[in-house]
Image 1 (cartoon, rainbow, N blue to C red):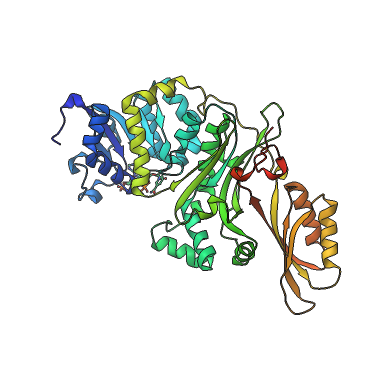
Image 2: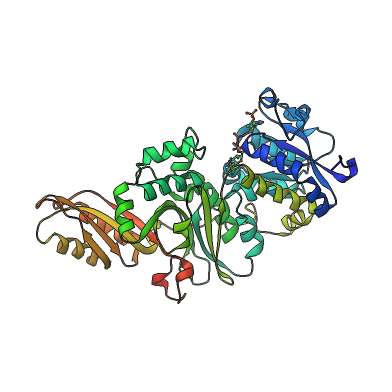
Length: 461
Ligand SMILES: NC(=O)c1ccc[n+]([C@@H]2O[C@H](COP(=O)([O-])OP(=O)(O)OC[C@H]3O[C@@H](n4cnc5c(N)ncnc54)[C@H](OP(=O)(O)O)[C@@H]3O)[C@@H](O)[C@H]2O)c1
């Protein structure tokens, strides 16, 4: 396709020419005829802002003369109509995003950290400036979950959402579960395969998934969710032993991000928000989401549960989400919808968050108990006193009188009651160490009687 006339072009400014930025440039170049057919106009990269243009002399899909490290020159680019931010971080990048919005330029971003921390003021600025923000790529890479929640599932009330929102952790947990490899080995493999950063803290601590959950929960529940209100636990302390014991009982481990309503007969109620390793049944579709794939289940009142599975990161999946946003902005509908909707983070009240103590679920427990008569009676009495009944109990054999691993699966229990009972159990002189407690997340899709709250992880109020 020959170069389109100026009046058929939409001028794009790209901030960042790394993994995602190069993917965006590639898609805009390789699919320009398709986009022209779709829109009657062609998005063309007019300027690329990077930290060090000298590093990008071998750029393939952008003209090297368009590279600059000068943000003022970037913003003054003639014909600039849309800004795509795929640089990451806050500080200076946040400033360029703000400056773009102040000029009324629509911004497409993949930057969950910026949105999770500064979304409220950025959305306010976008609306005040008659601009808009497209952010599909910021949550779960290529999965169109922002669009699904914000535009596809509006008819009913969303009761909850949960899923695998970090591909790095999923890759590591898949290696630990399927091959029985140690955590450190699986992390090294993820780094060698390019799925984990040299400093993986953001991913393995659960923080990255918590940032995505905060953005998605804000959209889903119409309340502003702070990332700090997500109870966050990473995967580095997960023992292979628990993965093995869980597997023998029919469960796979996943790092799940969960947002669910608690109580509130009028449909309001507070939100319980967590990112932590959980067990899911091997029959659950989530158990078959392996490696770097992501998945999200949204339980919406009218439609029922829907599930989205796909590549949550990587060059083309993420760039694909960015370019879809870009095309939606160019076509005009997204800007109109952005202006018309009144549920953006700056327009909704702050979320009331519930303590994890209020969550009702089944749990996997592992205790270390001395192999002496009467010990099980003691443990089940303490659990029973807290109103917790046992679904399954297994003791693993060792020499008589020593501490043995005891694995228990509870029936649905209030987490706060369970934690109290576990404290009492840990204080017994026939137990050692801190008991392990992992939530067992049940698939909403399998709940035949959706009024049966004891079996549903998403209590309907
Ligand atoms: N990679 C993925 O699979 C993925 C998936 C989902 C979301 N994201 C998000 O997408 C964004 C980009 O990720 P990435 O993996 O493409 O990062 P990356 O490979 O590290 O590339 C970052 C690019 O941004 C430029 N940059 C960074 N800070 C800048 C600044 N202050 N001013 C101007 N340019 C700056 C860098 O310039 P230099 O090259 O000159 O240093 C580089 O070209 C991040 O927000 C990330 O969270 C990525």
